[in-house]
Image (tube, rainbow, N blue to C red; front, side, top):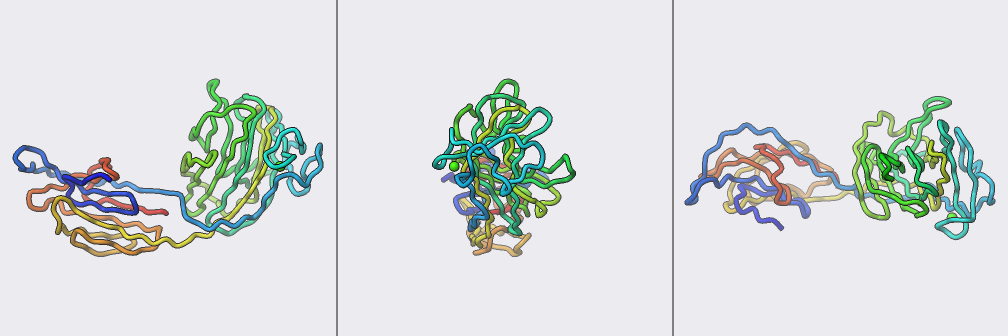
Length: 321
Ligand SMILES: [Ca+2]
């Protein structure tokens, strides 16, 4: 844990530590005086805690080899593909899809949910490294006979000769052909954020502004314009019910205590360091405001886990846990 050696105040949330720093400029313990106007805030976002309920699961074992898995799965556009028994994750079969240039093959399975959190988990692999984009999975909503919105997507690209897996426009990692990857997404429809795991490792939280998050119609498994075989297995869609989480925001100061800190936002009040705000249900937002000066100490920055987060007399904490 970092030590707020020169900090005027430090707030601890879970294992995260927020420090309102003092300026120790000069020798002999004298502190220099600074006058600055501060306005920078910061936020902390972590994956939500929720209780998972499976909406559907499909391992493609119940379909005939050589056929499409219809009518359980719909094919809105192209329909090149079939159930195969040549590669799989679970026990004998998987789904092969192949797009063509200008006309993707998309297998859609409809579902409905009113939950704030929805997610999918799939295993996917490509037979060939070819771009610009090939395997893709996303939530989907049809917008016209030939178009749709793809929401919270994960896509296999070949970009500048390099194979990369992307979530929206964020590069997550590279990939190779003929290897199964486990892809998991949790979409927080109220916050407009989705979280992506590849092979059980959290890779990114992606902010997206989709206007109709509660109008999603289904999950789409796609082989796009690269015209290559893409395979899918063990496909799961789930919804999440949020579990209330209670946290105490600890506001401390070091090396001196007895600093008056005011807080506002979802909760209002003042406290004299060291003190706690809570327990409060997450998520919540508060703005902590430190005095500009206390004795010889001059307020001049906030720290998060020992890292200077910017100069700001008030600082906003947004907790989504
Ligand atoms: Ca299978």
